[in-house]
Each structure stands twice: as structure tokens, then as C-alpha cells.
Amino acid sequence: MDDALSEFGRRDWQTESDLELLRFAMIGLGWWTREEAIPATEQSDWCETTVVVSGDHDKAEDVAESAERAETAITYDEFHDGAATDEYDAVYIATPNAKHLEFAESAAEFGKAVLCEKPMEATPERARRMVGTCEDADVPLMVAYRMQTEPAVRRARELVQNGAIGDPVLVHGSMSQRLLEMIPNPDQWRLNPDLSGPGASVMDLGIYPLNTARFVLDAEPAEVSAFARSDDDAFDDVPDEVATFEIRFDDGTLSACSASQNAAQSSHLKVVGTEGEVSVEPAFFDRQNRKFALEVGGNRANVEYEQVDQMLEEFDYFVHQIRTDGEIHPDGRHGLTDIEAMHAVYESAETGSTVSLSDI
Image (cartoon, rainbow, N blue to C red; front, side, top):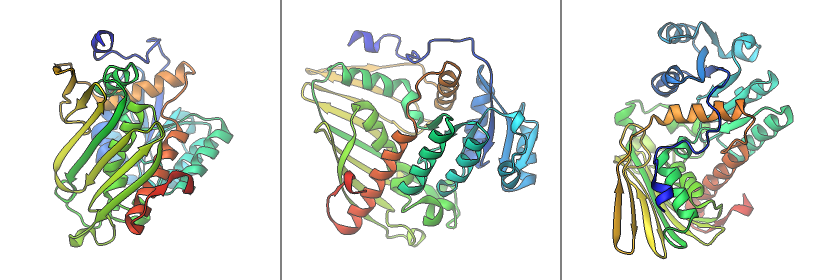
């Protein structure tokens, strides 16, 4: 236990520090790319943004001008046509979910490594195509689960795997926010099933407790059951203004998760074992300081640690694994499991029945 909590913020995945610079083309220039992803590459010693790609050429030009090293701005069509392929080594895809595949396919054609935002696509069928395309082209594919390089989550995983809380029994996870206060546009893509996938809250937020539980437990979802509802007019096109879902993992652990795009900002993750519990709260919002606690036998340790830039950790991990030929986790097959699980959640909520992942 002491080993897991010592040097809390250590990069346990890092084996080398002198790495060749990796140049990124940023595809999709929404606020997350502009305010989180590009600044992360500017902070990094291992990567930089050299190309920006948008559906609007003027927007791409504006973003290129504001970025430190991005000298080339191109449109989506120009990207697909092979423009500027000598100016980048990898792509970061942050378009609406249902647009991820087409950019991954072009990147694979050009032999470029792919870092794709989560969820990796809108449907299991399209996610499988992405995995197959990248594997056939022998290009690395990583899904951007920034929680998996967050020190608090990595330490939780170590503690659970080392038996510090006994055998894991229950996982509780939640994430909620007021989407329309953040982005006051009812016509936005997250509320459009043609772009987001089958829903809004589970696809965009529920994926956090789902995937983080998988990572911490090192287990896979086997069955799900769910409830969902939408009451507000803005959520008429999606079934999950608010949703709860239960997961039975293949190791027997049970998980209860919740998500809402129309509730106060809140997030947490707790793993309860036969001997104790480990928790991160708040857990999933990158601009909040994560708090970590371990309780065993009535003794509680609250760990103070230096907060990290989660996007910087994620980009540096990706570059490190590419440049050292290391195994990438989470890869495309890992991301595909989440898509299948979330579709099972929506099916369960619609039918009122438990859904096996083997049926998706």
C-alpha cells in the first residue's frame, strides 16, 4: 500500500525522456481542441501542433494564427485529399462522434498515428470499421481516455489490483453537468442522434464512470440494465436527459453508474471492497482538483497531491508509446467495448430488460 501511495504523481508508464518530437494535425476545432488539446501540445516537450483542420477555412486560419507553431490551416476536404501530409505525424480527432471514422480512415491511408476522442464512434459497426482500418494499415490507434493517465485513477487501480481493499465488490460512479448552460444552443451536435449516437448523457458523460471502472478493476462488462428519461423539451430527440445503469463485470463486481446533461455539475468514483474502499471525488472534470481517499479497517488516508494537466499527460503518454514502440492502452478494441456497452445501456433502457454484451 505504501508503495502505491509514494510518489503519487509518478508516470509509471514512462521509460524514456529523450523522444523525437511528434507533430499533430488537430481535426475539429471546437472549444475543447482550442482550449485544452492545443495548449497541452504547446506545454509538452514531446509534441506540437503543426496543422489545424476545420470544416470552415477561415476558422482554421484563425486558430492557426493563435497557436504557437501551427503554420498550416486546411479544410476537412483538403485533409481527405492528402494536403499537408508531410507536415504532421499523427492526428487528434475531436469532431462529433459520428464523424470520427472518416478522418481515422484517411489518417490510416496516409500512415498517420491516430488519437481519437471518446467515444470513438457513434455505433459499434462504425467503431469496428475504425479498428479494422487502423489494424489493416498497421497504424497505432488510441482512444483519448484522459482518466487512464490521471495519477489518482492510476493509484486507485494499483491499490485495487494489489488487494489493498480486499476483493472489489461494488463500484459507484457518476457524472453530471448542465450542458445548455455551458453551450446554450439546443441545436448542438450532442443533442443530435445523427451526430452523437443514440443519446446524450450516457454517450458523453456515462462513458467516464463506465470506462474508469473498467480500468481500475481490470475487468470487462458482461451485462447491463438501465433506466433513462427525458422531460425537458431540449432533450426531445434523445432518450437520456438523465440515466442510471448497472453493470455486472466479468469478475463478478457490480457497478451502479449515473449520468445527466441537465443536473448540477458533480462527479465521483468509489470502489468498495471486502476490506475497505478507495474514492476519487470530484473525479471526472479536468478543471477541478481531484481528491483521493483510501479507507481500510476504519483508518482513512486523504492524499494531497500535485494536480496534473490531464490533457498533457494523455498527449505525452501517446507520444511516448509511439516513439518507444510501446503497447498502447487504451487502444481501439478497448474503445469498441465501451461503444458496445453503451448501446446495451440504451437497449436496456428502451426494452426494460437486462442486456448481455454478447448480444451486441
